[in-house]
Length: 354
Image 1 (tube, one colour):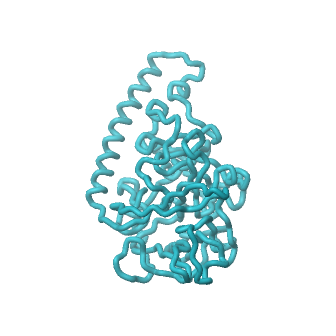
Image 2: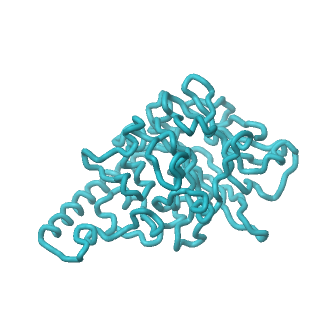
Image 3: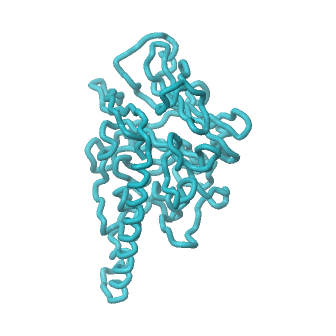
């Protein structure tokens, strides 16, 4: 894997990996970035086939780790360097199971990944179920804990990988109290709890069994696993993660019933189980109008405006509260030889993108 360099991306001093600083960097013997190492804490933070299949490796005391390599194993300790500043692959635990993450959405489809939603700056999410792929068992421990995101169909550079996130079915951060603490996992507004609620996690999916509704009584698809919140940590390979990639076909009208979708410009592309349709079409598939439908639409619009205002207020508050870590953002582009490689583009960013 290379020489581990346990100084977190946001730390100015060398510190051991902890719940406060859970991410470490791997470097080759030649001094180039080799990959990342993430650690999770808490009972159930890694479970089922995530553990038995060798993705999360136990460190004892309800603690697990996982590495993602960016380079081939034979260059890690050779001392050589090359022009690929970041690398040309994503491989989970290359020293043991060597599970490759597809570098294109076409390859993800061929490997049995399940297409999900597209969100601005992230791309289209693709999930993999370790038990029922390309379907979904909705068992927390069966979700591949590395979720790749690709430029969506119809977008510039469609199909190219843009990002991935680490996932855990237990809130992370200091004392497992959630990512509302600086220098931890993705920050989540405290009104959602210690992490992503089931409906918020479902924003990544486009599936009939995974509702994004915020209404009381909404079914939790992971209830059988005892999961009430998810922790995620996004890693971007993008020079402009605030604006790219985009999600073609996004419309506020199509998302009047989903405030979260409007905030993140979320779409469900045509290759998903539940592609986007206009709200009016959902209310009346035959296209008929009625006063009752108009009333429903009006109520939804009002509630949506209120929800967006609350969400925006929380986001602004979080931005004001966030501190300023250094981040290195990478841009992924095809080489002349074919395939994909990473060309480094260093920038200073005020915080991790979510």
